[in-house]
Length: 307
Image (cartoon, rainbow, N blue to C red; front, side):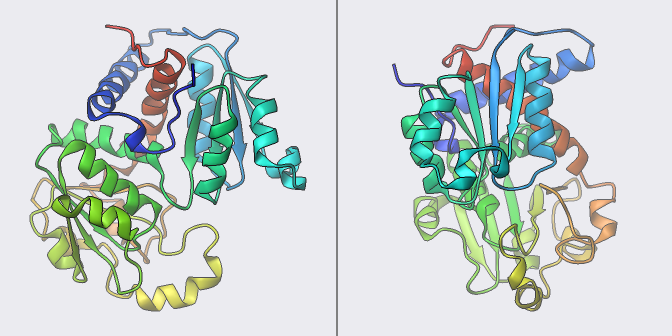
């Protein structure tokens, strides 16, 4: 039987997505109570990083340890991938030695090629196309602070990047609205915009996007690999900083999210990210709990324990 992979939010059904999110809440509560839960002794997570990371590495490595297993960190210089070995060959070998794999890379196609040849579950730790693990954490944070996801309004302000693409998928899976404010030329994936047509509004004005929103969220203007575009992007994104004026357009109890790292004074002001409406630290912690729930789901082939 082929393993279940998590390359996109669409690899879970809406029902399964809700199951994983509920389970993440349970695992978070168990950890807060100091309960030990280690169902996967001797299981090994292989982690391939072609993009640098803080939260992704620590949350996966700590999460697997808390589940009773262990994790192996592999940077490009540590593997033959960095010396030109075909990704398919690496997938066949690595998946014969570990129980689950997480990959953080640039090209989404490379991730898909690896998964096609892997005999164990593969998790997308981030590609240039999407970032589904971060969206799991975002959705858990929304549930904790807003309750029901259905019918909510999320304002995305800034670059139509992999995070923006992932919010479009989440809107389709969870039945909420995304208002996207981006400068011309920075729109998210056109295919996803078409798919999510009844769940998305594309705007240029960030104030209009934030109007009555339950959540306002953003990301850096120049993601990894786009550093050479920093000067041009800074000019193009003038007026797209999430600041107090933008937050004032949202609901009084709206929250602010950012996947981090953040650049204060660029895509978000210090008064917002460090202010009372910010939930970015809860959001960052929730990477741990949602990814534990996801690994449990994949290792148990979709049969989450009943608690």
